[in-house]
Image 1 (cartoon, rainbow, N blue to C red):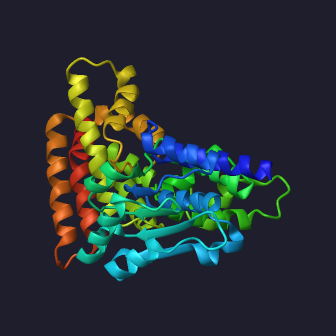
Image 2 (cartoon, helix red, strand yellow):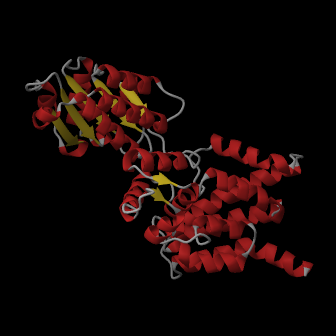
Length: 378
């Protein structure tokens, strides 16, 4: 029993570390609750990463509700579907044959007025034998009134620097497989940073290599299951555009568009992040920053804007940006940003051109100045 509890605690602490950094007061309180089994009356999970919220909820339920009485002492509700009377009744129901009940309200921001009044009234004097978990959906506005009154934990989306660590941890801890660094890189390039989709692909990869005594997920397995080859990833497309190689970029485009969770919109987002970074780096270089410092400078920039979509791991991105800087000047970058904005608008409007055609035109526009420069040099 102690070993199982220790394993749960380790997984719980890891989820907390993944959720946000630095550790918040809410995280510390939740970590203590797991270890002591003494829970705060109300928790509020909010932020951009729904997958981490769900994982944390599983850990909380394992610690707070006995499996034998879970049918009686666990209620899961959706905010838009419950009335104030129903919510008040559920929160006022005592536990059955157990120390506590847990009530989970998902999409708490969708509570109707009467239900929200019932919640606010309950928060004035919450029950000692009920643990209430309020979960906001990704993209919902922070509820400051809840944050100020309950134990709140924010679950940020993982940055490109932290996703590889999560992939490695999930493969080893949850699946019992080692995954090579090359496989991690290829998987993230193909799938992106959405943890729920990465988990689906990792589960499929574990099944694929289950008969291998080495229990290793390698690059070949990722290619076979995810359907992506090294040299055909979003990162490769970004590199081709960054280095102004239009022919290579156009050849890669249809392959990249076929990959899971990749669309014209996500490609434009990644290209926009890259172009903005290059514009910032060009200004830094022109101001005297030496080339050898640029990778570190780009990494510091990403830390300041951790929600930026790079389309690949941070390590790969900063190395590629540092290498590509000499292919750009300030005027080219201004024109590139204008072209990206125009394409973003076109993708959101009704149009005759397909997404692929719009991206082809964008790639030609972004790479054109470099092509002309190469032709003149030749």
